[in-house]
Amino acid sequence: MSRVFFALGALSAAVAVGLGAFGAHGLRARLTPDVLATFEVGVRYQMYHALALLAVAWAAGRWTSGGITAAGILFAAGTLLFSGSLYLLALTGQKWLGAVAPLGGLAFIAAWLLLAWGAWTAA
Image (cartoon, rainbow, N blue to C red; front, side, top):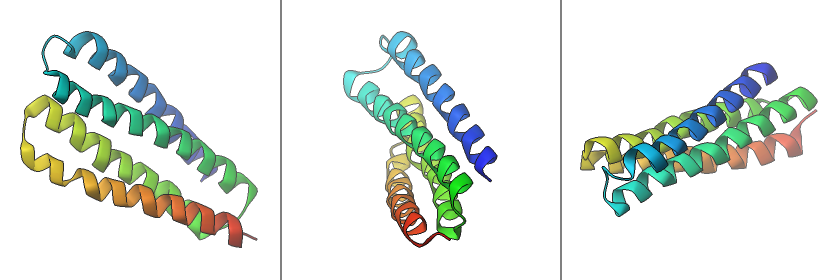
């Protein structure tokens, strides 16, 4: 699993850099500043959690723990839910997508807690 999480983290970081550049150069003239800020929050949290996936890959290669694996899955799911909903909200204007972001935030919180628990209890 460590290779899977490392690859997901690296790919997610690459996508975050690309979307950050797209936001800065391609969307600045098309979106209002507050909507662009929403897009940028999605990019920022995607990058944070891409790095978290790299940490999960390192931890999974070092320790055996279901908590660490679950953390990686939740970091990936949280990125899709949180950042993905913010990207779509910014690009489509569909306000209901704002209700999806907190689910991603909960996935992030649970993932960080599981990563800590997994490291603490690992064999």
